[in-house]
Each structure stands twice: as structure tokens, then as C-alpha cells.
Amino acid sequence: MGASLNQGGTTFRVWAPFASQVYVAGDFNDWSTTSDPLCSENNGYWSVDVLGASVGQQYKYAIAYQNQPLVWRNDPYAHSMTQKSGTLNSLIASSDEPYATPGYAAPSWNDLVIYEMHIGSFIFDPASLRKQGSFTAAIGKLDYLLDLGINAVEVMAISEFDGDVSWGYNPAYIFAIEDEYGGPDGFRNFVNEAHKRGIAVILDVVYNHLGFPCDDMWQFDGWSENEKGGIYFYNDGRSTTAWGETRLDYGRSEVRQYLCDNALRWLEERFVDGLRWDSVGSIRNINDQNNDPDHDIPDGWSLMQSINSQIKQRQPWKISIAEDLKDNEWITKEVGSGGAGFDAQWDAGYLWTLRNTLIVSDDNSRDMYAIRDLITQRYNNNAFERVIYTESHDADANGESRLPEMISPGNAGNYYAKKRSTLGAALLFTSPGIPMIFMGQEFLESGYFQTNPQELDWSKATTYSGILQLYRDLIHLRRNWFNTTRGLHGQHVNVYHINNQWKVIAFHRWDQGGNGDDVVVILNFANIGYTGYTIGFPQSGRWRVRFNSDWNGYSSDFQNWNSYDTEVSDSSYDGMPCSGKIDFGPYSAVILSQD
Image 1 (cartoon, helix red, strand yellow):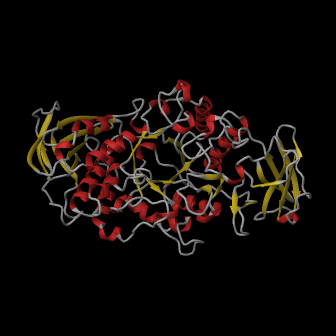
Image 2 (tube, rainbow, N blue to C red; image 1 turned 90 degrees about the vertical axis):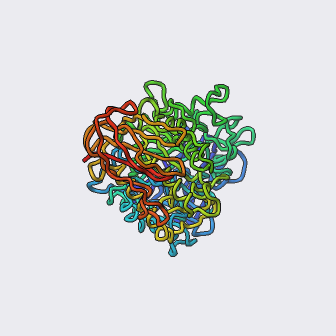
Image 3 (tube, rainbow, N blue to C red; image 1 turned 120 degrees about the horizontal axis):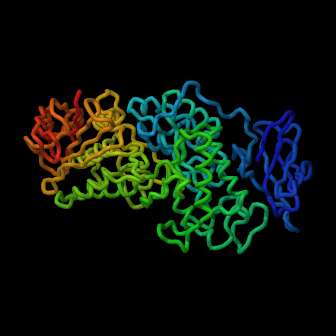
């Protein structure tokens, strides 16, 4: 489909079932609407070989429908687009655009630490067209992410969108890469440079709708019903989404193939390591709801099953993540059991329970039993079927702000914002699941995530260098860099100590168990420290403090509470076989393990 190079020229192929004739016009024929007619394949598809059509040349389809004037349409399968001529045109892209990075292997899923990134505002590029974000500028920060310990970046949607400024969730052409960011060549280089550093690239894809009015995709070949979108969209009540009348028609085999081709192109030809699907609830239900059978879309469910099945058959090591946000375990059940077949899903319950616990100012309002439930929650008895987070592009916008800002509005760098947001980070990186942070979270970026690109305030990486070090230390422990915290890679968790009066909670993480594996995490959600606090442990001996969030090296106003290594005796406590005493500061976390 689309424009494919051949010896001496290019083959153009397009789906336009209601067209009476299709022409391709471009730089190669002086934009003639008659020189290169496509031949009907008698199945809704049209194709032609055009001698001399070459890489970098612009083109469009001119489509005749009934007795109407010709309509100009960009190629739905265009791999590259440009606005250099003043209008958006498709480009013939190089056939050797993608390539693999020698020696690269994706991280295992239980080792993933994800960094969500918006290319348009992560870091600005003075050399770019609008002097906003680009793939080239983002490449310049990959070593920073590597030093932080990040081994996966999740790139917010980059398909060509309508207009020049966007989060990316209003795509018009899902095969083309946004020209403002650097197009396909820029993305290829970004993926390659990330892979050189062992950093996986997970890409957001949007299959629940196209951005209204979605440019030339609307009534693509002239046909429509009920004044709706035509061949690529539902033309009845199923078209309605929260973003416009542009829900794709999952019942049409050609549209299903279009979406499947897109997913596989990102994975197999552009070498991303996984996909994060935007709002799959809007694919499976008209109203994006659970338990609403009257508005379910069975074709949407089967589409997700089909694409996920093909990914597992062809590249099973690549991860498919759903943004469903309803804690529905069927999203990550295997297709053979009737599930949608995703490998993991964003855990909205974790997000909002933890955020609300940290934001409230009254310590008495914090519920340690709710914290216990979010630590132990999992889908289908698999800890790594959930992506856990305290910030994201959605959570930090739409009437909300970044977590430190929500804790201390207008003063996101004060003591309480630092203490409680980093307490949340400590829980994030020690809870079972795949942890994710949003860009700038690691240095207390404030305010809210804006629609108009606003570059991260990179000066805060210096101002709050201690907080940045705190995140670095947590990530390194989560990934077991020092062979002392393997349990954070494991499935197992036991929340064995809940003191709802004093707002203290403790849990045990382990993989196989034993020295270097067992991890004990203690979190204090109160604005008071404790001395000689008795806690249970899984085995006796010397337990070393690997992390103390109250260390004043992280921030000069932290109290540097003396959370020392402790000798654990065989005296049982908390239902654990052993016990020991430890000190910890207000709003603080302590992580312990044995050598």
C-alpha cells in the first residue's frame, strides 16, 4: 500500500472503493491530473507503476466520485509528509529508511523503568522550524536519561497531526511521522541512538479515533452516509467519540488491515520495542465504559485481539500496553482466554489513590489500608501486567497539575512538596509493577503540562540536583544495579505492617528470597519521625539501609534522620519470623536488604 519504490520508479496503491477513477499527481508529472491514472483491481483497490517517480518527490491522489469535481487526497499510507510548498503533501520515502541497531536487545519487562516524553516540549531545538522540540534535540538528552537509569522511553504520539502544535492524540495520517519533529529520518536516528545506549523505545499509537476533521481522510473517496466520515469511519452512531465523529470502522476488513499494517510497521520496520495504545476503552465501547454491553463494539475488541496476536506470533518480546484506565483484567488476559491480549495496562487506580493520599494536607486523612491495596493489586496474578505511575501527560493536565504543584500550589519546591512527592516516588519504585515517570518529574518540574509546548525548565536539574539524585538512587535500586535488591524484580509482595494510627506501612518484596534478594520497604506518611520503631523482618542478621529519603544530601532542608543499618533478631513480629528496630524521619521511606 502507498508509494513503494521499484526499479525505475514507484508503485502507487490506494483503497478507494467508491471512486470512479483515481489519478496520482506530483513532482514527477508536473502535477498532472490525467497523466497517470491508476487501474482498478476490481476489489476497491487501485494501483499504477510510474516511471521516474523517485524518493523525496511530492504527490497526491486526485479522485473522481460520481459526477463531482476531482478531490485531492493525501495518501493514507504515506510514510512521510511535508508542508514546504505551503500545503500538506505526501512524500515518496526511501525504502531503506529503517535499520536495526547491531547488538541491541530490549530490556526484560520486569526490569523496565519507563520515562514518558513529549518530543515537542522535552527540550527545544533552536535549529528546528518552529524552534520547539525535535528528535535531534531529544537525542542530546539520551545520555542524561542513561545516567538516570532509564532503560525505556515512551514517546507520546508522533504521527502527522492537523496543525503545528499538539500532544499528538489528534492524528490525521498515522503512517507519517510529524514533520515538525524531524520526520522519519529524525525518528530513525532517535531510535538508533536510544538503542545504542540500551534504551528501549515505546511509542504511543492512536487507533480509537482520528483528529477531527482529520484532513483528507474525511470522506476520502467522496462517499459517505449520514454526512459522516466515509470509508475509514463508522457512518452511524458508533462514529461518536469524545474528540469528534471520527471513530475508525473496525468492522471493515480494509480498515482493520490499515491499523494492523500500522502497528507492525512501527514494530518491524521502524524498530520500536513496544506500543502503548491510547484509550482502548474507546475502541471497545462507544462511551469508553466498563459493563456497558449495549454500547460495546465487538469489532473493536476483536481488532485488539487480532493485532496483539500477530505481535506475539511475530515479535513476542515486544510489549503491548493498553491505556484503558478501568482496572479491567480482561484487557491483559490472553486472547485464547477471551482477553484483549495486551501485555500490560496503565493502572489508574494506583495513580489516583497514591496522588490523593499524598496531596491531602491532613495526615489523619491518609488511609494505609488503601495504600496496602494499591501495592498488592495486580491483574491475572501477574505483577508486571500493570504500569504504575504518579504523573503522566493526562494526570498533570486537564484541570490537574504535576504532583509537587498539587501538594503545594504555587510553591512546588517547598519542604512538603519535596517530601511527599519523593515519598510517592519511593513507593512507585518499590511496588510490584512496571514504574513510569513523566518527563521533568525527576527534578520537581512544576505547574501543569500545557497543550502549547513549553520546554522543561532544565535549570531545575541543577536547582534540585539532590532530588534528581534521589530518583537516580531509586531507579538503580529498582533495577538491582548493585545486586542487593533483586526482590524488586520479583513477583512477590507481602504488606505485613499497617499502622493506620501512626501512618506507617511496611512490606516485603522478593523474587527467590535470601541475601541480596529480600527487600524490606518502610514508608512513613506522617509529619513526624520515629525512633526505635519495631518492625518485622523475613530473616535475622544485619540489614543494611540502601536508601533513606530523609538524607539531607537530597535536600538541605531534609532532617537527615538517622536510619542506620540494624541487627535483626529471631524474635517474631508482624507475623514475620524476625524483628528489629529502626529510626525513620517524617514523610520518609527506608529501603533495606542484606548483603
